[in-house]
Image (cartoon, rainbow over all chains, first blue to last red; front, side, top):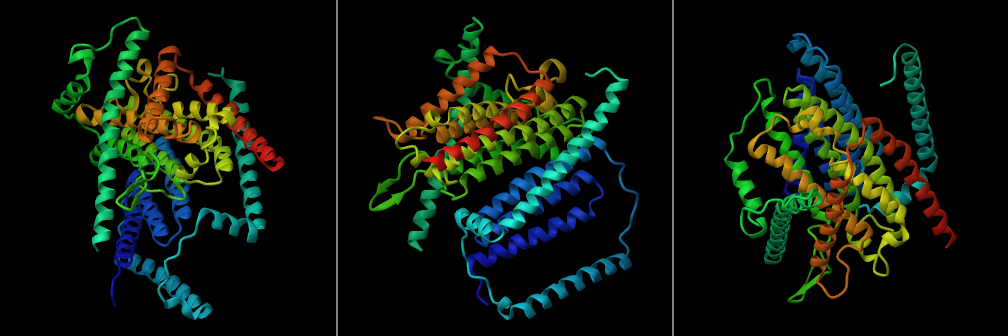
Length: 177
Length: 329
């Protein structure tokens, strides 16, 4: 099997994703775990870029690494959760975890090969321009996009309502700042 | 193989020139700011090192490098050491997509005057801006100090809030240019700079950019009177210098982006492209310094009200109006 430059990059990035994701779920310190997850997301963005989807790569950084994980970090810093007690990773627990993941991966692979027998072949490098991506999304999947945006709007209004309810109760007791 | 090596050498040369230029300009923007602030406050400003104080940035640099690098006892060592590099690194990386001039033709070879012309260049800029929040948050958290912690929480809240207004204010520009590439956006301003057709977007972008750079009047994360100096209170020596450098590279980035999005980028008569871009960056930064010298600091609720209740709705309305006008035409 000849290794192209792309293949070398792919294996480096894939190893980075797996190692950082593994570190994220085994760290006892919450902030360290969050940071490893950020590294994992950044490496995923690199993988998207390598596969020819720069738009997806940039969204991965802006939304996951940049927005969601900053909020995670914010919450962890603000509420300072007590460090988790000593949970040892016994051989039995490790075996159970790997067993569940293994079954899941195997099932996904079998399903993928059954649905498309050509899935085993290497993917051709293709680049999706933002224009093509946007056109595809709003041409074929406009209903899904609208539904997701409606869902987010509902969540936004709900958060606003909860926040206002908290403030109303407080202002009866205390002077506002 | 030879062709590949030439391309690689040209790329490395471009990166070297841009990094040197940006760092040099950052050092002299500090001098410009101190000189101008001195004048605004009826002082002379630094004038001891070299003529007109021109060697002052070099003296400052040597001073910072020679100072002891102190770390608080309770600090989280690796994160504490890493945080300043995030701020400076993300700011420097943004320059990769800023076009410096028209394509150069050397020996039958077309050399674009930009490190990389990504078709998602504008989103890349925002990706870097959203990552720079980590430098502020982690720097404050890892210091194990209450002032630094408060500063970093304020900084993160402020940067997340104003990123929205910053992003939304640029949408009309993308609609007019029809592209997310910074090169194409500059090309689209051949006839007129976008500041003439999108004055509201320009104002929103400029105000949000000032808030993103965390400078007076938006300097709550480092409010000296309340927080020491905020998220970098515990830093000393060149590590503090990195935060400081990051701030000045960031205002340069914001100046360059204002130039690219609204002032026509490197376009201009007579002078070569890079000089026009430089002149526009210095113009924007001078305006920022002037505002800094004029206005007092906002209160926290005023800061949040301005971002969420004024800038974001105004940017949304501007997008809708631009859409109607474009469809109408």
